[in-house]
Amino acid sequence: MCLKARHGAIAIWYNGYAFAINKYVKYNSNRTIHAEVNVISKVPRQYQNKCIIIVWRIHVDGKLSMSKPCHKCQPYLHKKNIPIVYYSDNDGIFVKYYP
Ligand SMILES: [Zn+2]
Image (cartoon, rainbow, N blue to C red; front, side, top):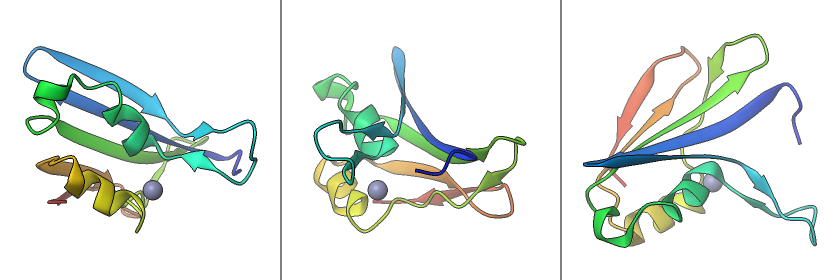
């Protein structure tokens, strides 16, 4: 676990929003629930294909870095029919991504 940066995600939909960060699973220290997967679990099912997810990695000094959904999260986002994800990159810009 990197103590200098946290990975977070927010989902927004018509009448609500949800926030999540990386969740470390206690029974197996190698397993994490990535923020973008964690946040989907908080979106009402009827809005999962109509929400926008914003993912970021922010360092303790406030700088953003690359947070593109990993090879495990990408198929999950696709399966859940998430239409658009914005993720932070190493230039501190949010990049639009279609899962
Ligand atoms: Zn991931």
